[in-house]
Length: 328
Length: 250
Image 1 (tube, chains in turn orange, cyan):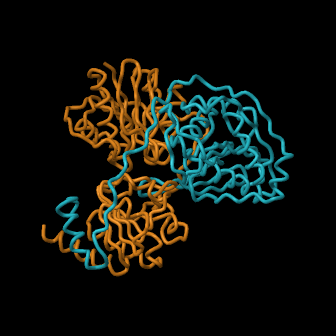
Image 2 (cartoon, chains in turn cyan, green; image 1 turned 180 degrees about the vertical axis):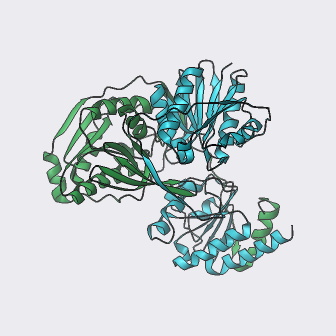
Image 3 (cartoon, each protein chain N blue to C red; image 1 turned 135 degrees about the vertical axis):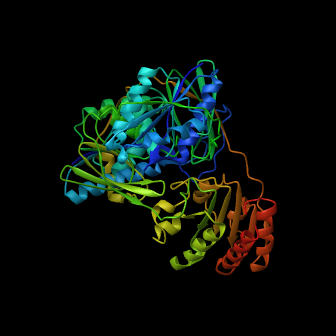
């Protein structure tokens, strides 16, 4: 039986989806050790504590609320210090975070502070006696590595969407946790630029419509946007060729050197399916490809392929999807 | 400015991989190795920062067996001034153990800026750079997609999910480099010749305790073979029917 500490990340005034997934993973890990407690750190500016009960829904027994004016933006050094201090004094078996922009930064900091081993981007966790075993997709998702880690605590960052948030409601006790100030020089956030409003993040979207060079011109990306709108709450991605050409921002790139995604539905529009791109989306549940070249490698992974001119097929698909959803 | 770049030697990311008979590593037969993609961006970023400032020194550091010297020479052929090889029989799976060895080396170097790739292709963990900064007690920007450094101050951009943050920091600092910062140059023939005479110091790596090991490596399950359902606009109704009734995503 062992307690697990989990960082439930927030942005603005609410925990993010990855926070509920991390709490779910921590709950499962605590149960696997024989039923320890899950203690969730919820850090943010004044008022974030009001969201503590949400974490109880996903299995947190205790929510440790660290409120600080400094936490209005991502105060990485102080948050890492706060998590590490709590981990030291609390005697936890593991510290769980999400492998998100925040977690990628905090995980190594916490591990270095604790002198603890860290495993990143984990998709499965199991316990066997004194050791933990995890699975981690490496080599840009081309190889699945199983790692065995000894000692405690172990810092574990979980891959977004790998652990589906499961409700196991309980009344979480709330405690306040003093924010530990950073020691030494820190980095200063001067601005947070919000992305396109109204679209989910690529890592969190259940449907992604993505465009490649087959669209022929930047202005034809509108067809991809329109199809995403027809599906409802869909995200828009792009290939590296397209982001290199400046048709779309670099942050939209899906592939080995960009975002790695596994939505329920991935629609590849005018994408040939270079290895670099496939590495970023091949774990999607259902893949649709529309491309004029029937020999394109994307058709080898597509559950449903249409050979044709995207400039004709995509508008027709957009209209048909819109009609189909109206029928619901 | 004195800049260190910590690099890793990794297999060509476009390769098809096979698992070795041991079941716990990849089969390296026939694979091409080079400076890791993100580390290559870091090398280029270092060269550009010093070129823009009109001077300075760049040092490339790698930990691992003797074959990493090939990557160190490559970096020097691109223009890095000298190299440090931290010898180890293998690169361990434990990123904190690596960070300790690098921090021990970097602490005495008097570097203004220390660059890493945001993660390596093979381990895909993104631990070493940020952990090294923490051990050194200096600021770290993790996964910068834009970077500029001048007069003891740096500014960078980090991509967040659906947003981006702009940050400033003082030197010395660590920055781990995301794609977008700089495309690495190809070494010139002159650069390749010059690199042969540049200093490469080799010494034992002072690794921390290694607390994790690879038990197994396996290839991910294959997707079922793809299926073309039709051609042109005429295939659209069938696609929508399949998305509704079979995939159940509409």
